Image (cartoon, rainbow, N blue to C red; front, side, top):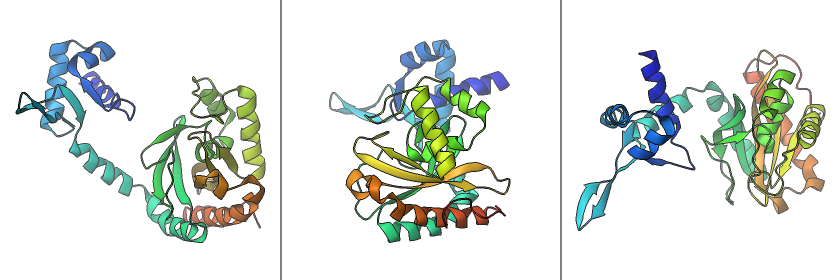
Length: 263
């Protein structure tokens, strides 16, 4: 039964932003599961609302598509999971104040294996196209939000991240060991990460760490926008506000030491 459950979960994890729909034959090739067995999985998931098959027009009639998509049940479960993350309710008031102060997008990320996962976002009143949105992932080596998390991890975790294949998302994405190690060291020494065109061309982000009650960094908070709104020469104007916000959220999480950066 546990193997069956594992297979079912593995099928669901194939539905990604890059490939949100799959046909039965595509899944059979990808999973190496026999089609009759796979069909039973898909029927069960569809019956439960975990997957769905949309209707399409064909020959003047509505017929079921042969493509499967994630179903509404997962939206419901995702909302429950998001609301159960305690830090979101703690952080949102501080994030709103930060957004009002700078009129930039404010993002909250959590360490999730070898990725940073965006779990909350307060949009700017002047929204711009950003890579980020709630539920999206970024590798720990790319983008300020994720890389500042990596700066405070163990050597073992850093090596685990660096052993994985790397992708060049935009012109500024660091991909070599030398680049990434230098940026990691900078983040820990200076208490922030700064990225330009690393996940989305022309966008900038500044991120700082949030400490928990065990003095570990599992979360980060960041400001993001286009490059003209956050020029590197004016970074100090944003950092104090970010550090103050991170210090407040860290204290809410039980961090009992003085926040190690800023005034």
